[in-house]
Each structure stands twice: as C-alpha cells, then as structure tokens.
Image 1 (cartoon, rainbow, N blue to C red):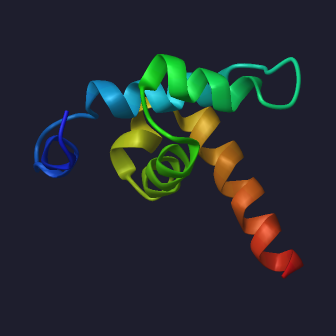
Image 2 (cartoon, rainbow, N blue to C red):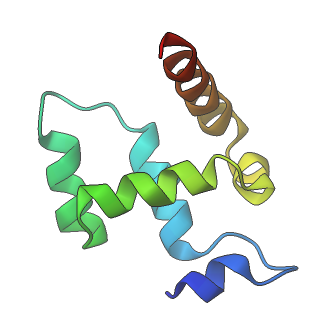
Length: 84
C-alpha cells in the first residue's frame, strides 16, 4: 500500500491502516513486544508505525472504523500534551 491509498477521497481505510489499528487494540505482555510485532507483522520500523498511528487519530475514517480505539488514543495523546 502506498500513502496515496490512504488519502484518496471516497475510500475507506487501507489494509495497512486497519492493521495498525488492530495492532493497537491488542494487549502487550511486556516491553518490546509491541515494537517486535510492528516489525514482524507490519514490516515497518516503530517510528514509522507511530507516525502513521498519530495521523490515523485525526482521520475521520479511522474514527468510523474503530471509534473505541481511536477515542482512547486521542484521550491519551491529549493528556500527554497537557502534561508538557
């Protein structure tokens, strides 16, 4: 998938975007497990994963696809911003 697949109007989330949200829904047993899954399952480095995830939090299609996860992550992001 390319970044263009994500931004075409009238289209739903890309397979990659759905996979990012699905990975974010999972519970992680300990440090490093999530980053390892990002590399192995999505084939990307964690920095890129978090960039994509942050962009998804502002995407209305992501909110429509998984409102519980997106709203939870928006609250976490906002509380971190307020701490700064």
